[in-house]
Amino acid sequence: MGSSRRTRRRWVLLVVQVAVAVGLLTLVWRVVDGGEALQLLSQANLLWIIAAIAVLSLQIVLSALRWQITAGQLGITLNRRSAIKEYYLSQIINQTLPGGVLGDAGRAVRVRAQAGLWASGQAVVLERLAGQIGLLIVLTVAFSVTVTVPGGVVWPGWLAATVTILIVGGLAAPFVLGAVARLLPPRARQLVNGLIASARRALAGKEVRVWQLVFSLATALANIAGVVFCARALGVDLPFGVAMAIVPLILFTMLVPITVSGWGLREAAAAVLFPLVGLGAAEGLATSVAFGVVLIVIALPGLLFLRSTTHQVAQ
Image (cartoon, rainbow, N blue to C red; front, side, top):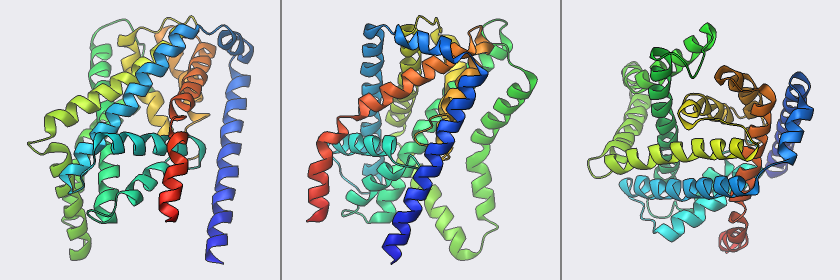
């Protein structure tokens, strides 16, 4: 009975998220010139699309290696092949199921044998967090430059304030978490302090801090390059330096779990942000759609591992 209820809830959630995604896409399509976006997509340059596929595939491999070193700091040994295999599998699940995190949860479950589910779950969460930290660093640098140096990006007051709050909040989060922990009951305080200790060891330990920074910045820049290449495929000139300021904001919207894999939210953000750099909203919409399709394509190798993994779990 409990299992059937959970299954129904998942299907209801999937239907709701698909409906929200379709609704947002339809709204954006109507507000901007959807016909122009479709025209741009129909004339996509295959070579630039292949370049986007290549750089975003590299991003998956780099993310898998980041997970490998993160897990290693928490007592979980993964070889490169296994890490890359599991990461591809998680990506195909994240792209097709609601929430965008079920694939990551599966990673944690399948590697729990060495150190337990708590440690494997922390490794997955901290690896994903490291990726967001990389994007936040890029956004912080690019935003600071575009605010102080005229030209490139014209930030409306409301958006500049929002980005400032995001950056300050992100930088202050570790200190705030530590301060809040002191106010919690003993058991909760112990739990939070344990998480903080794990984060320090996995992300900032002496053995891994440089690699964590390298992998996180590299994956952030690879994602941005993927968007730039998708834009170029459509004949949209989105300079990389400018993209560093707006693309992280577009990608952050994909973290909001109200649609499937960020569809709809990502396109709405692109339609709003592209005009800030002198491009059209329809160009933003088309670029985001192309980027979303490429994300699906690069996740397809995960299907090769799905059957064998399902068989192993069944055993």
